Length: 478
Image (cartoon, rainbow, N blue to C red; front, side):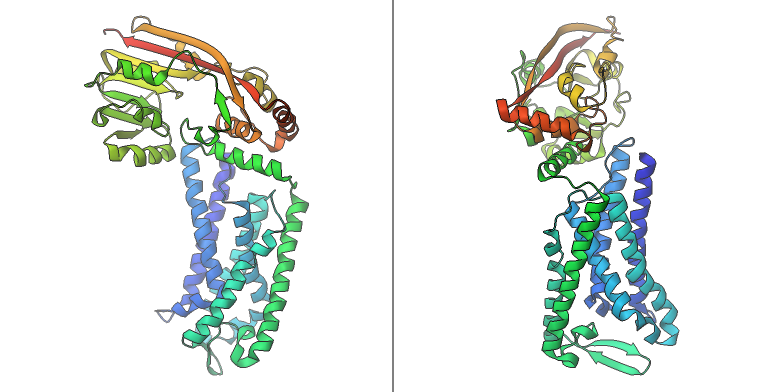
């Protein structure tokens, strides 16, 4: 899986490199940068490709760092990918059909340079983008309405060309036979040469061709990939949101799911133990909202997260308050000195008792709430490929509990219910909890999800097991 993501990342970086290189090669002539080139559709479409694929490359690098073992192939919306592919394909078709002789008409000393640059922006980049769309993006959501979205940019470009011709200066293109001056970038759009009637006719013919091209792309999508109904596509979107969830943040489904009240209140327990002068370490802070509800002095708080993406989020939220935020990719190696915190809190994050003991002061308190191995067992049996759940990371950690190091202040274990009122919320939940729902995929579980959806429509909800642990420990002397 990781090797595939690396290949896709390199492939997309190559697209960016070819696009930028091609534009620069064509724009720099005799050491002079030609800004007029940006009037041409070729350059604008290549700029769009460069921006979109640069974003995809950055997202790909972030995913490799944050999810070294498994994550979805980075993409933007399916419709945006389809529109970008259409836009650059137009560049390829128009040049190959009407303008391919251009390179033979330039001055001899520039011909090789122009041929190389032209090949990159007109042929190499479009072909690579088309391959990426059909091989890597694999659009299961191609809709015929996108055919009309595809026309927005060409129509906008036509309007831009006409307005620029009226308000701007002439465009200069050097040909062997001399200097040709036109206010229009392409001969088939040149009102001065052809007149408005012929240009409008040409525009209508091109638009008709663009509609056909858009339909062909949709038909190829439908032929190559399974075409999912709208409700399945909605589930797939929910799954993607769940996979991208930062921290233990289920706020996106708060109005579509609910858990029975637990016999304890985690926030109130923490607040009752925290003293105004206590230094606090919160491991796995998530979005930081629970931490802020402790209402503790910010300068005495240190918050940690194990992914770069989550660290960026909580730094934005917590750093302005004076809370220190630390990136801790390894739970068994906290970057803090021995005996430096009065209280350590941990809510649904990986836990290393030895490290918590090390960073706590003598008499310090560890408060943690964890998910048990029976969590969501009934639903996971339907939506994942496991027959029996392995012990959770917390339960494995408790197997090595050292009574000489810890005094057990309180320990509770409870099983209750969580209710889902909409199937998309359950998909989000299952996609976010990869350990509880290993290998879950909407595409693989459509029949099962449709059965669960019928249950929700019949009784108004579907319930799942919620297994929770609460543990409060006090550090003994050395």
